[in-house]
Image (cartoon, rainbow, N blue to C red; front, side, top):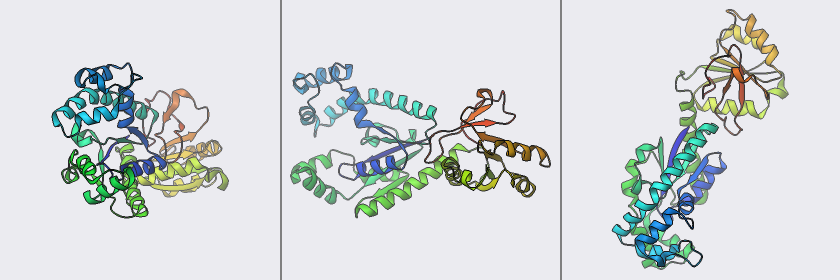
Length: 328
């Protein structure tokens, strides 16, 4: 799993990039949502906030009056640090729980949307950090236009955050949002493609790039199955060669190359097994087949291929082997 931190100062366009990454298949963890959950009525976090900042930060229904609290911490570094010390440990604990759950599901890319990433966390805890940025005058204009703020209010909100110039050197990817929406989408797409390659490569870190994965189907219709296309996308991103074949031609394929692994569809499993047994030398590589009801002893679970749900693979001669997170 690739664990990514995504951040951006106010009015930089971070929310737009978050929605794009979500659309393209990333798992999202939103720090603001976790903070609101931590500050729910009756929570220990909310009680601590009221104890530190006064009961007037509570709304009539017992929830948090965010405007009142904002008024007490805006421009007061000590008050903001005290608030962060109350809220962020609970948010961090919940984020780690969600990250573990995503890893257990086999999610390939987890994007942690954290507005104050550099202010409250060590960026080194993430495999990659993505910063969304735009010039301060443009962000001021957006705050005036989209939120109806005055210049003074906009400047105060911008000044309350760490300048992006200090964040850029610590970021692996910087997405500039000073142009059109189409330009932002293209830049975000370029960064996401690189994150996909990094995630795919992490899943096969013990294998050499350039090795071959053979995908075996029973016929052309079977070869067009979405799951095979998804597996091909993932392992192409990992730097592996993909060879498409059928059960009838697998024997010929194995005479010309020795792949790292073969993945056969359920329909092609029997023919693939026969060709694999007849190869010289016999059983020259690992053979897997997709199955809706695989032998639980001989199963290894693949990380979720790109654009597809997680799949189960049954491995020939795999009985008694420990499960592994990657296919090859």
